[in-house]
Length: 346
Image (cartoon, rainbow, N blue to C red):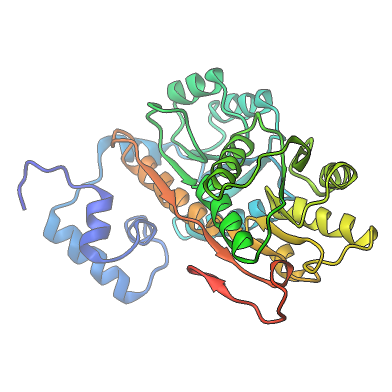
């Protein structure tokens, strides 16, 4: 191999056929299988890998902590992400520190300021709102950071995101196939990253199918929560008679199911229902709820691996990864008792 190419942990992982986390475990003397140790050591020897001086200095003063800041630590999608992140970083000797920022941009800035004082070696941030001030602070932060979510065009920061507009399109396509024509949309705040993305997906998909976009068929919950979802869905049902409802996450979908049940509406006979995030609550609901799988676990794993790489190689080019959505079809959107699957489903 040419000596002009800088050997990185990523190259070692690729050469050994293992994950970056596995390479980090071996290099840090942590527990790993004999097979993995042998593969990594062989790759290190063959490539002539030497940890960078910057990486060594980071390790000398590290806290052994990775911070994960999310809007709501009780949201099932974030719980799933936390579990996945914890699994990845634990193998590299890190502890996970959690922070709940709510949906306010100022809280995100406060978390970033605190962590910049040396309380963690890296940050995973899933922001609901991305303001110019937040972008500026992220770009000037001394802390290695990976964003789980979308960033403005041209912002050079590591990030992993879902394709929410395509995901909403999958939901609309499915409902149209089921013969539904009056498809309503229950969103969260539209000034958030997910709210804006999911609204655009709804508008594009409805337009594609030639279905009317009616103001009374669209409501915005104050937040992406069950409680706010109940208020929003009841407002929708007071002003419109949809034959299908798409909700911007599964908590809103469970709220929709509750509101419709209390009104004597049958799901899916009267109104079909689709959520987003494909969390456990969608599967446990009665009837079980069809939901767009936005790859929360896959996004979390990819982001954690990316952050470990950023800590080890702080000057590497920024990366951006998009996880394709799939649709998990359950009882809430089909008349038959049997369920079907589209894409790589559970």
